[in-house]
Length: 101
Length: 340
Image (cartoon, rainbow over all chains, first blue to last red; front, side, top):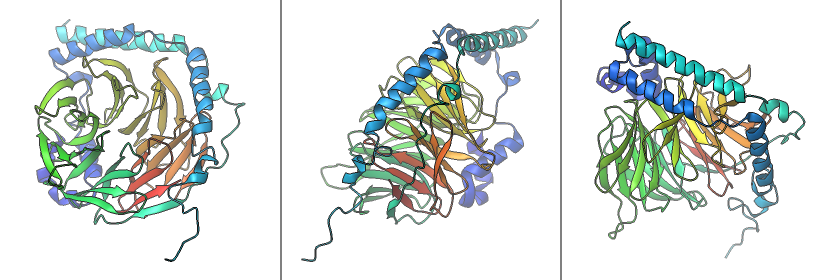
């Protein structure tokens, strides 16, 4: 597992640890388990999970997409990044001039 | 035929059946339907604040629910709670392990959490009677690094790990209530659904999965990416989610139709995505990249609507406040920026 490598590769960790972990992982190819490497119990669990996933009641995209678009369009008016009126009251921008007291 | 071989064949058959069921539901495409939709135009944002104080790469951040405070974690071994309005540091918390990869802010604002190569999720109480910040729990059990953690509430947190599992923890007892197994590579990121009943995870096996928090089952599993998924985020209405990957693309997955709807990519973009977030309406998708930029995508049309440049190193994390008013980005250049 990758976490065991950290001791050996501690020199690299000071820089780019995630990158080096992934790079090492891809090099060694030992941490990405393929179907061939799953044992019987893991495969049984995988098959059971797939059976459950297959049962999922899928909606047609001709229904789900227009509903997603409708939801988004209705909310765009409240989206500060799309409605400039909302950002007129911007907490990170001073709305009045500086006052020296 | 051995038992193992039978199971492998059965798995392949089931995968094909799922693929066919998805195809049968794929009777329209997002880009076709939105071809006539008005574009969002050019999105430009300015840096409103630069949060200076970390002494090394920032790896993670999360906004507090008040849309004002936020927490960041850095390789300098500190967790900092910032007031993004004033840029003041409310707390600078020294960590037991400086190899931190993730941090989280509890919805109540009373706790923060972090973890990384120590394989532990440490919970910090921010509102002790004495006025100081201290560790209240160390959740250990993962056999790999902690890549992400998200509070459900003050007593429950979900974690993802390099040990390929995710877990739901009871913070009070320090035990795992539920373990989520199924990924075959390091799990890099997770995102809780708006109704807190499910979460999505993204992993180095290039797949993302939707999990039922209560029963631990994987309800749906998605492929498509060709490399590690580094980031996942739910669409604001809970019916979709987006992933960001080392393959230089982001993808939108529809949970109701159980399939990919859109890919966000460009020939000029050849580096990995580290982090993703949606604007309040979901119309904009913000993604942080290894090339130091943040790209703004029109979620519905699949076009790039803007670029946020300003960091001097990789954008490692980003998040949009719950009121949608600001984007915070964190970088390996040790700074956080607040944009809108």
